[in-house]
Structures are given as structure tokens and as C-alpha cells.
Image (tube, rainbow, N blue to C red; front, top):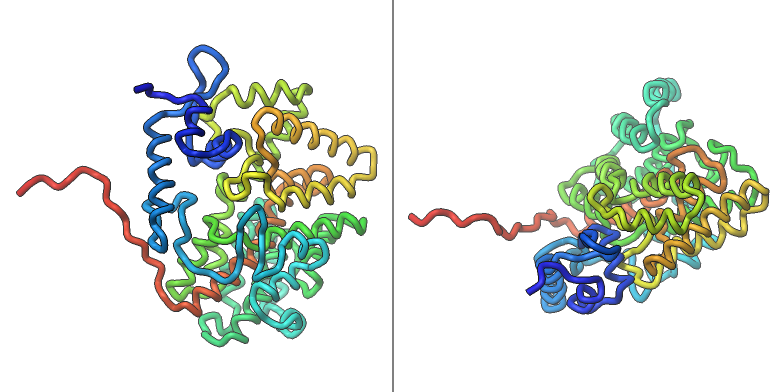
Length: 411
């Protein structure tokens, strides 16, 4: 039996299309290697068969967790977000349609199941202005996620009733948390101004269409079911840790290069592709290089949950194209479109929300790290919803491991 399979053979073994196979590689679920002679990519037969068995196990598992948690069957029940048939739904509302008009505050109110006035009624974060300015001076040169990871625990020390089980107190803490996080991400003072406007002010965004694009980006990022950072938040919340602690853990997970840190890889991709000049040749060379150094086949392309394309990325790129009005913006948008076309022609994969956020950062001329900040601030609303749901559940999340190491020696 052959040690390696071609793409067609691997896809047939797994019972998936070629774009889905490439998406598996893009997300690190499956690895490929260059053929010793020729330009094809090959797939280890053992790894492909192992993944096929896992998929079959998952179909048989029913309500029992799959043997692996890598894009496996659900391990927790939730009433917050549904991803099905290419759609993203927040508590019964289509998230893409919601993003066309709603603010992050309105999306958060939906996710938290609270009145739309909860943001108006919540008090200001009880952090002294002098202390906040001193913390910002210490962390000002840091990247946005590093600054937020430093400032959230510092602010938590000043928050009242962090460990309360009362719903009203938790909602007030949640509102203060979003405001503190926004301020930390953009190195500004906490404010009651709508969150997308806080980002716009810090980044010098003045055009109405650009402002609306920031608003929509926050909403489409608000939740995405049990991704790595959200599962981290739920695990922390299940121990009884307060919201500030749970969200800080989620932020740390989010910053990894295989999660929202992928926006940084996409930014590097933009730079390399534009420097290369011939985008089609660059993409072909990038795909032929193999993934010994890169975990993804092409950063920002292909999502396992959306075989036909990430609707979040599609919406943001649609709105971004409408926002490009100046000559510089048109040039930047043309570069983005060329990369999307070349990637689609070479792999059949569509851009993800990570790609769209990085494109937004590039076309609008936002500061480095703006794509991550949009993702992090938006996703924090969903983290809080999941933490609250976990508090209500009351159980400790403690999966068991299936031991697959060497057997103990016989007695």
C-alpha cells in the first residue's frame, strides 16, 4: 500500500471535496508535503486514514464527545450561537444581517439576553484616571494584545463585586469590562462612547462609511461558537473565576498565530505579495514551498465550518469595496482583489474573516494591530455570554484523556 496519497485520493478517502481537503491543511488538521518530482502535494496515507476514522467515530458518537477535540463533535450544549449550512446565527438572529445595522452594544445585549439599556445604566469603571494613565505609559509601546493582557488584571483589582453571583452585578461588570478592554487595545481612557466610535477616534477614522465598517466588523466577530478562545473562557469560568479573569484567558488564547494571530500572518502575506509584483506567481510559489515553516496552506483562506466561504469575510470585503473611494484606497483594494482571485484559482478557497480584517486594516490605513483589536473587542462580547452561560450551568469542565502511550509493564 502506498505511503502517500494524492489530493484526489486523500479527498476520496475522507469523503470530502478538494476545497475542503485544502481547508483541512489550511487549518492544520492535515499536513501535506511536496512531491519529490513534480509540483503536486502529497498526503501521508496513515494520517489521512486516521482522520477518516475520527470523522467516522464522530458520526457514531452521538452525544458522546469525539475521541479528539480537533474540529470534533460538540462537547458542550449552548443556546448562544449556531453555525450551520454556511450561516452564522446569534440566538436566532442572522449575524450577517445583524451586522449591517447593529452596534456591538446591541449585539452584546442580544448575546447576554439583557435589556438594550444595560450599557446606559452600567456605572463607569472605578479606575482612577491617574492610575490608568500610569499603566498606559508603562505599556504604551506594547502591541495591542500585550497591552490588554497587562491592563485587564490591573483594572480587575479595582472592580467591585467581581465574584458575585447576581445577574445585575455581572452585567455591570460585563459592560465595564468591554469599555476597559477597548481602552486598553487603543491606549485611550475608558469611555461611555459607543465602542466602534472609540476605535474610530483613536485611529483617526472620520468618514461615515469607514465608521460603519468598523461597527459591522465588531458585530461579525462577536461570537463563533466553541472556538479555542471561547472554550478557554468557558473552562476558566467553570472554575468560578470572575469575568475579568476568564476574558483575560480568552485574550491570551486569541493571540496565538493559529487563532486571531493569523491576522498578522495575513498582513505579512499582503506585504510579500505586493512586493513580488506578480501575485499569481507569488501564490503558486507560496503553495509550492510546503508547510514545514507555515502551519497554513495560505493564511486567511479556507474555513472548515464554511466549505463554501466564510460569510463574515464576504460581508466585510463587500463593505470594504464600497468604502474605497480615494486613489490610494482603490490601489490597495485592487491588490486585495488580486490576492483573493489568485488564491481562489489556485486552491478553490475563499477568504476568512481574518483576511477581511487585515484587508480592512490595510485599505483604511489603520495602525498595526487594528485587525486584532477589532477581533478581540468584538469577540469579548461572546466570551462574556459564554462565561455567563457556564456560570448558570454550574458544572466544572473536566474532560478525560484517552491514554495512548506505552502500556505499563506486566507485573
